[in-house]
Length: 235
Image: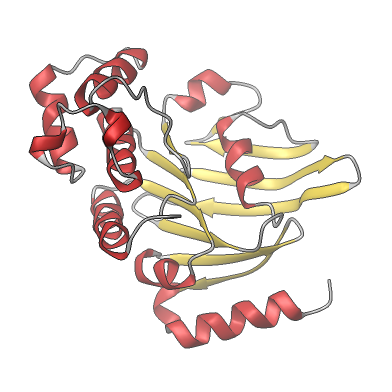
């Protein structure tokens, strides 16, 4: 569902991506780990068509993003670190508005069900988003993404700033997406969460994908050791 082929991007003197090769299949959760500046967000932005690579290709369901950006985006739902919503609208009203932009047609009741399945409490769906916690806003973002029924989910630090309970709820939702056959690419700093939810884990540094491993092959301690070894090694 997602494929990067020799993806390269440079900003001035900074090489954000260096011939990145990556693939994520249906039902797979691929977590990208790495420090700030490693290239995680640039990778996601190339798949979204926000950033044009200097060379290489980003493919979504076989569609070249650079050549057919709008067609590729139809297969994608994106959840950023901070979900931007209209604070004076309710959770349901935000979902109705953003869902209308996709051109799809769900009833108001169906959209309400998406919010509830995303974990938003029933007594919150009609309250203004301005009073929501970050975790509640993330749940509206999840509902927006899942109502689109996209085959691919791109997540950029989605659990940053969430409390442990909200993070655990998010992990359960990710597993459900995987069981539904969606491909998930998640950039994160959270080694523990990556180990809990991922099918495969990749470690990035200086725009390079240094290693990829099956999450089932490492425990939390081994993952931390491998990560720190790569972070402290010479470039």
